[in-house]
Image 1 (spheres, rainbow, N blue to C red):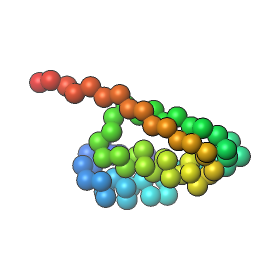
Image 2 (image 1 turned 135 degrees about the vertical axis):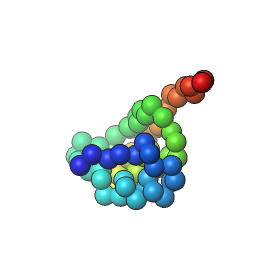
Image 3 (image 1 turned 45 degrees about the vertical axis):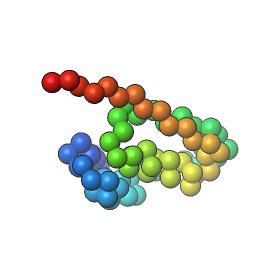
Image 4 (image 1 turned 120 degrees about the vertical axis):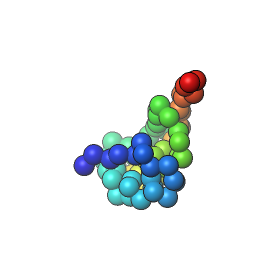
Length: 73
């Protein structure tokens, strides 16, 4: 399933699209430290959904990093 989030501006809309869209294999994650890297944080819904899935799979610590540059027009 292809998730189109770029045109969704509201947090609750993005969160609804991400609901149940992520699957994490617990044996690969349990007790691990995980670094999430994203190119853009608009609402935080994507990072939040991924962090929740990782937490439920048993990740010990989750770090998030995003690097965004604002375009000047």
